[in-house]
Picture 1: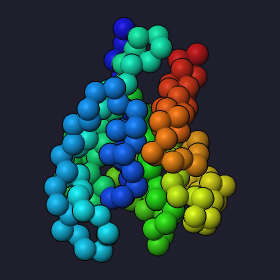
Picture 2: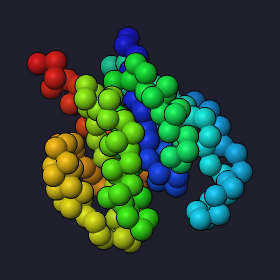
Picture 3: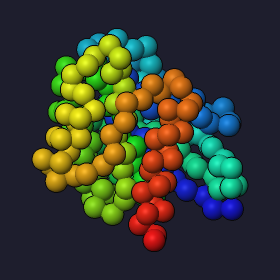
Picture 4: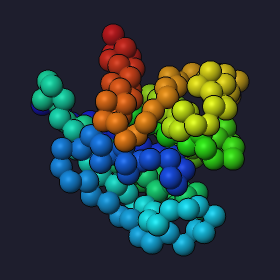
Length: 176
């Protein structure tokens, strides 16, 4: 049995905590506190990390760690990312500038992204159509990054599992 560490990151409200809860086989560990950022309509926000566990069919275990989304907690990101095998960036398409949000996380994890695979999950695409998955993939390509970009509803376990599968497929492809 192998154990893998995967990081979920993205803006506050992008769905990191929800995604982990959707697939974790244990009650997720959360470090949520009352949200004092009144620019975001959300009662609680993560200030440390979220944690969940998923066992794959082959017995391997995925340890899922969610970062705090606010840039003021950026100092925690690299600590959480230590020894991680991959990164999932969640983008909330209902925010004013999802592409700028993506840039924050590409920059914040630039050191890690030099050696680890990444997949981008775009949420709320059913109600907020722009930028679409294609536009986000094109923006990544212009920035010199080529990562899979998928629409996702983080409340659906099968969507979150697909993000994890795509990330693990990248790892397997690198081993061949």
